[in-house]
Length: 225
Image (cartoon, rainbow, N blue to C red; front, side):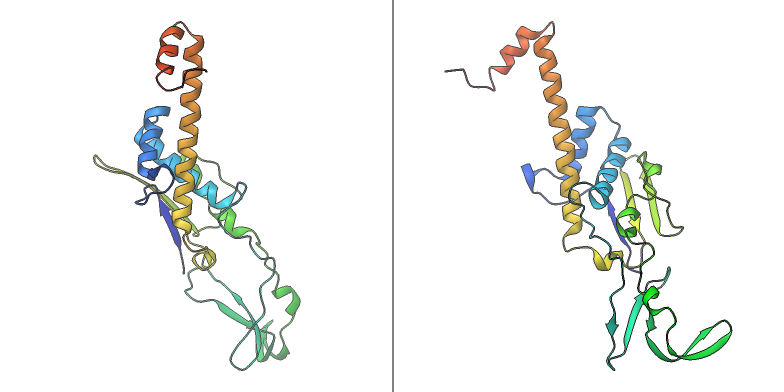
């Protein structure tokens, strides 16, 4: 099984040279979240960037299974089963297959139907499973055993992890997806914090300390020509 997982912290820098753990600290300072709340919020943002939004990172699921060919040129499709490390194969033509307690030969019955993926779109939805445990909103009904979300807190560490156990998820994710999902969460938190601080500053300009606020503002904004 090719499981994929991510956790709250990152160790690389891009926009504004801000890491995800630094953004989590900003989340605590600006929004007055506790460390556990900020950690959980970071994981929720990462899951959302994988599953939804303008450009979800997870590829669009195919509606039909591709017809493959083995070394003999025989046509088949693959099925991923829970708990299996390799997919099962169903051949279009086979010397024998078992159905209704009897052995048959020839073309596999309902070959066209067997190519249809019944749970198309599952890959994206699966990232949202289990988020209720972190205070987030889930999407769709989770399939038992295919998602794991856990939270750990000690005196020195706070960590939230989301693990996706879909058998094929690791195979379809694009290269560098962990870095991308961390970057998007970082940018989201920093953008939210910037807007929050701007709102607070604008309110100060209108409040009883408006004179002081304008005096402070003059240190950061150029004088009008």
